[in-house]
Each structure stands twice: as C-alpha cells, then as structure tokens.
Length: 220
Image (cartoon, rainbow, N blue to C red; front, side, top):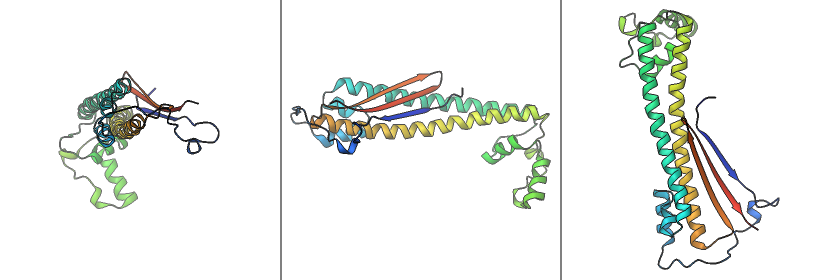
C-alpha cells in the first residue's frame, strides 16, 4: 500500500429529512461571562482549539491541538522524506545514467524518467513535435544515457515517490484550512450553547500514513 495522506470527512445527517431540515436545538445557554464570540472564532481560525480553550471547553480543544500537531508533524515528515528521495534521485541518475543534475529544472528530471537518453529525447522532440526550442544541447552538462530500462524505471519510481510527498504536503495544508473552519463552527456552537450538536475530530499517524476524520453528530 502506498504511503499517502488519506482524508475522510464524514457528515452524519440528522435523519432522512437532511441536515438543512433539522435546526440545531439550544438545550441550554452556557454562561460565558465577558467572553467574546468573535474573539473565540478568531482564535480558532488562528489555531484550531484555541477558541474552544478560550471558552473553557478543554476536552474539545485538546482534540484540535492533537490534530493540528499531527498535521504539522506529517508535513515535516513528508518534506524531509521528499528531500531524501531527491538526493537519492540525483545520486542514482549520476551513477546509472551519467547525468549531471545540479541546477536543472523539474522538466529535466521528468525527461530522465521517460527517455533512455538525451539523443532519444531530442529525436522525439525533433521528429514528432518539431520543437527545436525543447532540444537539449549536445554537451556534457545535458548528457544522460541509462544503462538499462530497469535502471530508468527504478529512477522513475524514486521520482514518483518524491512527487507523492509534495502532493501529500499540499493536501495536508488543505486539511489545516478545513480544520480551522470546523474549529470556528465548533466555537460558535459552544458559545451559543448548542449542546445537542457535537463536532468530533480524530487523527492517526502511522509509518508516514495519516488519516483524519471529522464528524458532525446530532443527538435526538
């Protein structure tokens, strides 16, 4: 199984009539003294769980803090792993293709994965696409020739794993933004005293694979 970031968002409906048909019932209004709703929401948008802690809901805030920490830990882990894979790619291409990769752009790394040599790449661009601007100069700086198809496929696998880490990072940042919206909504729920509706979060990080669940539950 590939190590990838899997995000599962569950929105549990309030019966067959749907969410929109069932209002959040206000069981009791919790006294918050001089607490400010907008300050709580602002804190939640800045750091999920901070708004809940501001309104003295320590249990919910702890869940958000753990999820936030897990996400940032996953991002750091993915970035470090991506850097390791990038160095492995350069070393591997240097040994088995004779390529010099310092200062090269991402297109050069991509072309190494799909063409056995610089000459094969140049012929493809010249004959099939007639794109002279895409040709690499016949100098040592742009030379490569894979020893075998097996070595090129091995490099391609390293590159795919490297790209996967950056896709995971982008998804994780999206979850961070989503988490802030959920926390802000939860802060509003707590402030208004909606006790029959509950937002739950859970997170898990195992061997580089992270999963996150957000649930909206209404009790009748």
